[in-house]
Length: 116
Image (cartoon, rainbow, N blue to C red; front, side, top):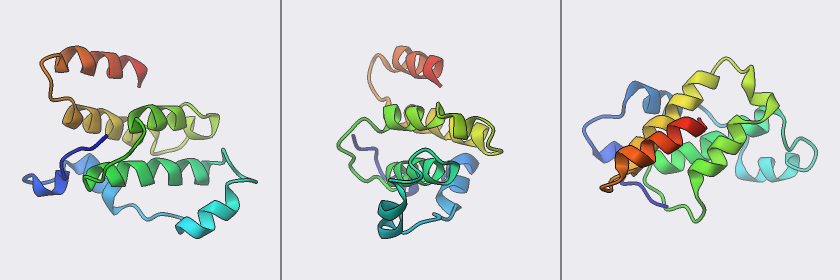
């Protein structure tokens, strides 16, 4: 899956800009070391979510369906009480809206909205 580079459009929305500005807690190397012991901790969940979101915002191509992965992360117990949970949900909504460019876009958006 690939979105256009959202930054090349006029300006990022406040939601996407906030996500883009968030720091990652781990480097890729550090993350690979902690994933075995803390696979569903809040820190690893946030890291996984932010990596996917930032790649989509930057227009990088992702092999899998990133929205399914993001929704799976949001469904984790560790995420539900996080103070930025609503921001993360809004991020998925905005990224989905930016990715759905077909004649069925309203229908597709409704399907995603019901899963968020």
